[in-house]
Length: 402
Image (cartoon, rainbow, N blue to C red; front, side, top):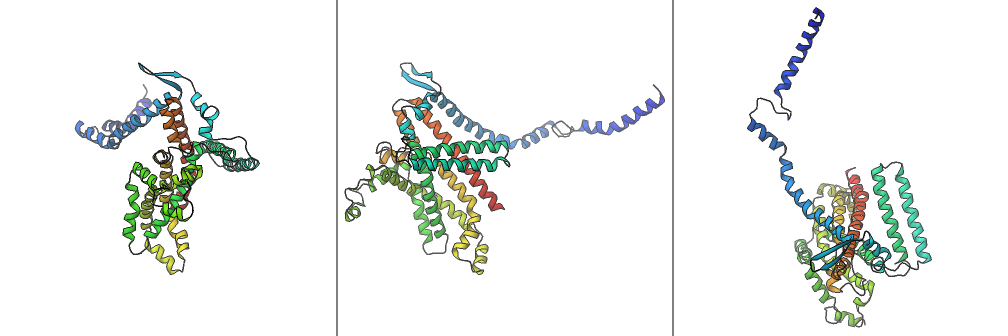
């Protein structure tokens, strides 16, 4: 070895010496080597404390959510029979799903879709054009993940638009799918408007507002079963409290439960009586958290009450409003107690929700079709609520923050 090589090696050793010493002093986990093993263990536990706390909850969610979902899928793709040895499963593929769209359950699930009227055809063409234009607008700016989600939302919108035009707008009867959407869309809209209006009134400095707060909150304390039986007695046109009023108006022979749409509206009114307090209490809390100095500044500038609410109050409560509406919509998809108790799903199946439809099919021992209907409800709920969250909730939150 030459003198120049020995000189170069000495320089390399001098340069790597401090680094080697530093490397030896630090453990792979970031703990100095001189720290006792007990301290290192406590430090590791502290770093992963959040994981330890959340792991039991995640495990329970996986057990109580994923396992029933997978097990019900086995029912949905099988024909199930009761035998002396228990349940017997025979794989049938997607026949239980096909039955709801093209088989014996089509009219019950989708309603009557033939014939489609000229007006329904025109409206459907307009819906398809609007959806395709919406997709085309987002084609250049959206990522492929967002585009996939928007394509799924667009496909669901076109299908629901066709079903609306082929059934309701063509004078045909609707099935349990659109009955459920009626409860969700129309019912939640009415409940939100009334609940927000009552919350706004009770947030004002009026006399007796504490009394009205308690009064409006009482229906939320009653169980759905109790609400169903109470409303059944109240809506009785022969013995209920409205019988004298109906007699005075000459409607003593009117039976609301004999007409499909009057029965649906009575269901919506009873459901609203129970759920308006939920929206009321959430919106009241949001309204009372609006800073008073913002409102007072607008009043000093001479703004009217309507402009103050639209320009000052509403932008600050809109994140709470859309979140409450989303939670309420998810609950509305599961409505079952009221139509089951008040009308038994009648007249015919006009007040049946998809949940009640699934229960009735289960009682008929067709557990495969019942599971298929439940999965169709899950898909509908996920697509509708995810679309509402992505295109309404997040949009309003971004607008409020901006």
